[in-house]
Image (cartoon, rainbow over all chains, first blue to last red; front, top):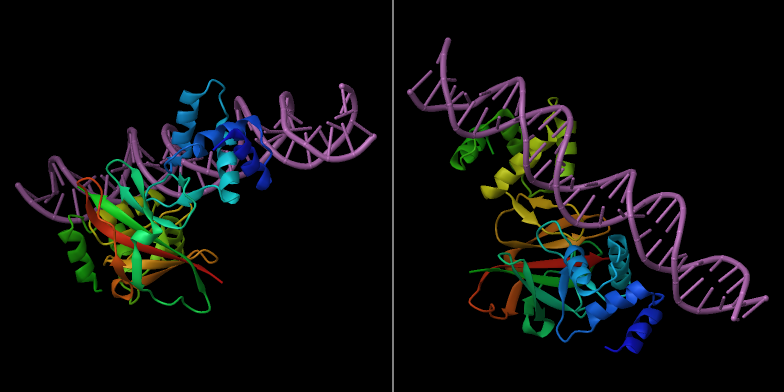
Length: 135
Length: 135
DNA sequence: TTTTCACTTTAGAATAATTATAAACTAGAA
DNA sequence: TTCTAGTTTATAATTATTCTAAAGTGAAAA
């Protein structure tokens, strides 16, 4: 993803392309493969990568702004930290608790044959399949 | 579940049947339906229910001991608190984010037709399906 | 271009969930 | 009854995250 596209991406979601947001966006979205991270890991990687340090609060702000804008999705993992995923399409996950590693599963690789109907006037928003791994 | 069974349940999982553990176990397991809770909600309910106050740390200890012993399962919900479930059989969940309510889905009510094979020498430990609800 | 101001960033304080600590207590074996 | 390892307790510590308020900045308007 080119810098011009990063700018577009930010602008189109109502986010001013500030120095920090552009730097974080480049780091997150200029990749071939999807990227899973926590705010903590992202902070460490950014600190290592670049000279100018971005405040932790800014990383929280930016990640949440990207999430709200639909550029990141949140993945729920047993434990205390919140994981984010640059893959925002509908998909599922493997989770390897040994390595704390998340692996994407394409939505087409899981077919659910039977599903219960939603309770009392509710509708189904989405279905998440989470496959825990062991050795 | 009778008091004698609570004692057995504790003993058989290597937990001394102390006053506090018995009280918590009675509250959690003497029910018809499965029960979902957070440590916070359990603490409030116990405080309301009984005269003698149990320390919060003891509730954490006990809930974790029950989980380790296999008497409770942990359910991951988007958000910051950890939910527990008295249903320890293999099953799935609806989640209503409006009310923060979890609803059990029997394992037989969801049939998965196609599933990807586990990566690089890993095996599948378990599959959790989480259905988010909307209005 | 300069001005202006709402939006951002920042460091540090505040909050919330959970875990650690260490002293007092207790179940149950001897 | 005595003894000891296991347990409870209040409180401190830790960790992830959010809040705050002051300083900085992008970009629209003059």
